[in-house]
Image (tube, rainbow, N blue to C red; front, side, top):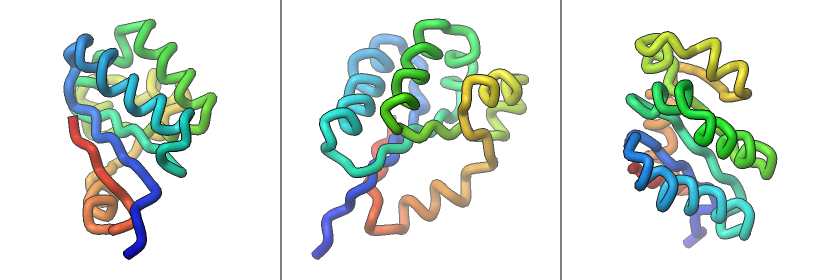
Length: 115
């Protein structure tokens, strides 16, 4: 049986303690230490607002992108928070992502971690 090589982190928790001590820590190290071949972080729900309003969070996302982590965001959420332009300026891929998330969940090549 082939082991999944791609990690998708579905980030929905806007609690900064969780963000700093789990989501960012694990996602960043997963790519940097090559625990996974590819890592994608999906911004969903209230985390959209956190990204737009928190410089520390934006800077960490930039670091993640610099080492090759793909950052995507739910476009419906971004529209709800009037954040599409801000996310795109940051370099985040903003799209209607429900179908893609469903494919990640169904595809044995991916592991999805939801927080």
